[in-house]
Image: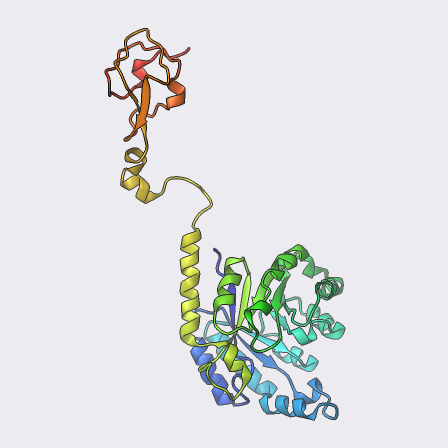
Length: 331
């Protein structure tokens, strides 16, 4: 199994505390993940305050400045991980695009014409989360991206992630088999997880996900913010990678041949049956299925069915294996 590209999503688990964000980065850096992800938004450009003041206030409390996001990006990159952020503000793209390896479009923006067009402008691989969507809507978004920029006709340039936006979700809502449909789009596929635990992530990897995204926290029992509940902690991430290693070993190679242990123990010979005479066979006799039997160990390698009807040219005593020298060789 090829290990999926894994993204530790810190998201809003910092709860608006920049020092806490740095602590979480340091924890994530102690895991084998490929990338550490944040969310870049500003309440004023994300939510209409007069329509939904409560949601506006939530995002206002959790937002960082662009300067802080730049510091986060530099810290992650300088530590050897990829920096990714879901950018929910069009102006932030110009500032943060030099730091991001992938352009992440969250589920809420997946059907947004203007944001899809903006993302396609940067010519970096796009990660498209698909919560809230139907398959036809996902197909529309992929087509729009490709219409905006033909570069995205390449499979490697779009990752379509199965996602359910609620926190947390029951296993029945993970719907990992949706990835099968996504493969028909000619894109990479993956899974963005909002279940509790790592079972869904493990299965997604076995099903061939190219990319996994999961929330990351220092304490998934923290009840101050719902995202903590669906998050993995450092030890959980390390356990997940240990599982990847186990699965990779178990899947092994598609080439079917005797293994090293089978060869080294001699079991290829001792476990298999060879062909033996059940009575004395004299010269000029022809072998029938009553004259021979199969028992361990294998001897000459001559198969039972290939000896039937062969003429004896050198006698064989009862209980002895039959060798090539004992039978007439057809010319």
